[in-house]
Image (cartoon, one colour):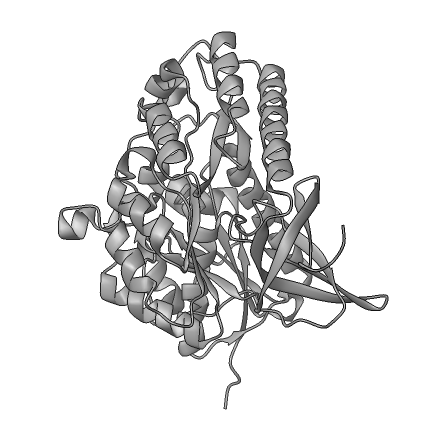
Length: 446
């Protein structure tokens, strides 16, 4: 009897890519492969790539080359999947001559068959179908022991932002059915997941292709009925699709975190027009802040977009100073030759882009510091993710309702008693250290 082959995945990119890889791992496990976490123990290594921006593409290419170096000293097969093959297609074998095969975003479902093909003849590159993605699977292997999981509700994108090539890599917008999402959420809850994080390229367009209307509010309403899920968080909300019904659900549902990630990219209408983004973004943000002040907002920004002037920089800095966002991720403009923004001018010099990024980061940190100072003494509920023995007690870290994993920092506190990972602890905000929130027990003196 032939023992099952050991397979390891290296996953690059955002949480959406990670979920897709977890689906593929689940499918491969069901096909008889043995999943391992260490590449040194693998018979097969799959590099699941991202190519959204130049830095992501370079990371993918560098990772493939490193794995191919491993192949020279170890008997292992190397396959590549995802966005990079979809982007450069038949260049893959010329660029990475040692790989044993690849699949793009449109034929990820063919990976098990390719891996099982033990024929000695050279790999014949497939004609890659149109871009898409692995949007749903009844099999999933979670890659983290932490008590949260991402729930991908759609694949692809229906927008045409000038800087973005996601439609080229992932195709048109495809919502999952409400029933499939309810089923997966229940399965995740049974496995011990306490927090669901809703993701897609654009979460607020959910349902427009299936039901002819925005249906995210209905989805949240249904998911909130999964009893074991104690917190639901919304990421990647496209500004113009945020409606009153959605805001009411977020502000009124007990287990929906009063938190929305809205990547605005900029606030200047001149820049937004060049980006082909909604120009009424300011009104949308100001409306949420005035009518739903308990909802915490985070955002993403692009520094140094072509044609961004110093007046545009000042406008965004002033807007950040108004304190609309608790957190913001700031990214250098990344030029992609296949995106329409590559034709825009004038271009901002690389050094100036870095300078502007720093200006935005400082402005946002000042807003964060001011808001957290005002929050001192208020209660927050923390999902515990790490507990370490420290002196006569325990150092505990986790996330509050206004902190998403990896991007928003953590909350830390000291506990005299051991607390369980996955439990929720009510604490009081006591200060900050950088972007880390410091908390204490309610009856503990400051």
